[in-house]
Length: 95
Image (cartoon, rainbow, N blue to C red; front, side, top):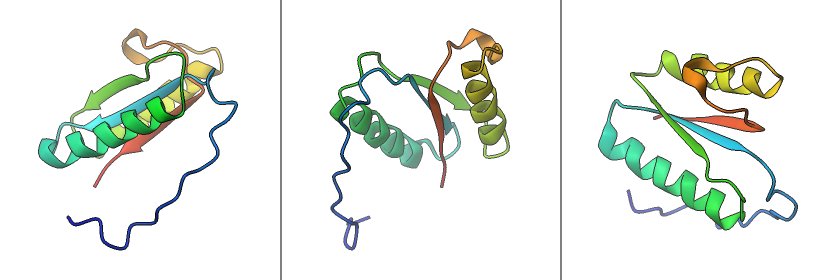
């Protein structure tokens, strides 16, 4: 993966320091998903988040939307699975 053709975009990230973020990734194809997770966490760090993002690993692609939904719902006052704290955003890392 050369990265050729990848856009060189730097979004404006002012005002997101207080966001609470969760990253959900599969355990499947760990070599690939580890790289994706690393970049997601680096982007969160570049945004200057005050709190480290929650990282949740799930078995496979079927569990990704289920866990992302549980984390998103926990933001609205419902409790997420496995006691994860409330988050403003949750996104899935998949192939």
